[in-house]
Length: 255
Ligand SMILES: C=C(O[C@@H]1C=C(C(=O)O)C=C[C@H]1O)C(=O)O
Image (cartoon, rainbow, N blue to C red):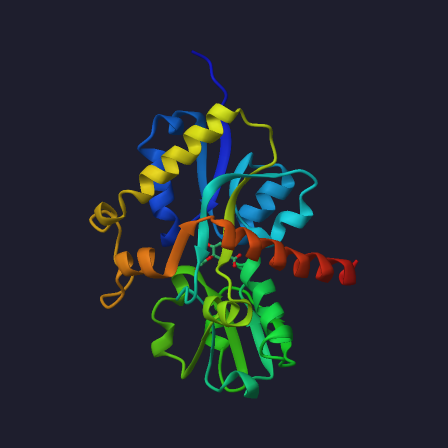
């Protein structure tokens, strides 16, 4: 049987593994050509047409002329997310500069939004590149996302969780990344895809046996169940609308 294969790219961090596990143990994987990348690269590939389906940072959605969110599952949070934080030696109000993680598209915009609307703190943004975490010191803070952030709370005196700050600011949960296509997929494929992701999430306890623990005092199960919130529910969709209005306004200013 000849059938169509879709090019899929997903985030390479630990929090995506339950979703990938679901896809891989389901026959739908025969129709997927899978690859993993950091979030900013997932976004680039979808925008460039190098992927048909991607787990993309939602901040990139306004750049896509046509897209569809194809799943009820996402990388989200309802309060503290643990792996999207601003770190520094000094409190935020004393920070003069902030490195913005180059892996990220969403959290970079979320940090800008929260600094403008919630913390109301003027700061100079610095472009990050590999190794930038070693340059976070004194009045220079840094936004760090994903697996690289695990354990950093031991290194820096001040930590600001962006999931918590967004919740305090808006009362809403948040969605960092969603499953998006720029193609037209059959409703059968979309239903199967969604069911496969659900299957993965139903196996969170088993995943503890497969995945490496990023550090001895970091519980993956706690992270997957108390910090990452995988359901793209109504609250997260409302949060997405609000967040994208900010992103679109920023894009309009920059032209
Ligand atoms: C919660 C997280 O969300 C990530 C943050 C993203 C971003 O800032 O662009 C994109 C994908 C998510 O994987 C994380 O990985 O720590």
